[in-house]
Amino acid sequence: FLLCSRPLIVVNMHFKDSLEADDVTSLRSIADLAVSSKMELVFIGEFRTRSNVQSFKTCQSVLNEEIVTTVDVKATGQSSILCPGMLDSTSFNGHSGAIKTGLSHLAIPRGWSWGGPASPFCPIWAEIKVPD
Image (cartoon, rainbow, N blue to C red):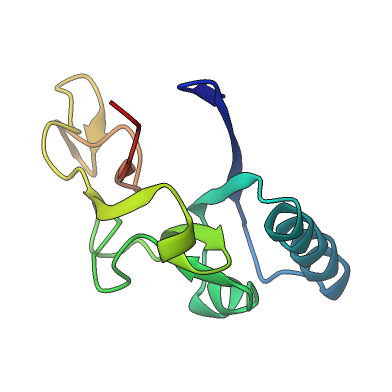
């Protein structure tokens, strides 16, 4: 994406299981390249486990890790927004969260009744500073 003529690379993640060592190496090299070239990069999505988030050692979380990011209390998951390097060197202003309301519809099953959520995961968001 271009925001005010500045590039922002958003990598959407959805892991179904623990990351393999090769995947961790590839993703770390992408993060390191972004930091060295001063390119704005963000990994965002469903990381499934806390250990998957922790494998991004050179990244910091924009989203507070205490925020519950699943609609169903029985669903397991760990959604996150990760930036390579230090947060104060990025365009993120520290405001982020998860949307938890308005995610159900009458036509979606909820167990044996209706009015279920479209997904077990909440949409997550983060604000970016843009010049005036």
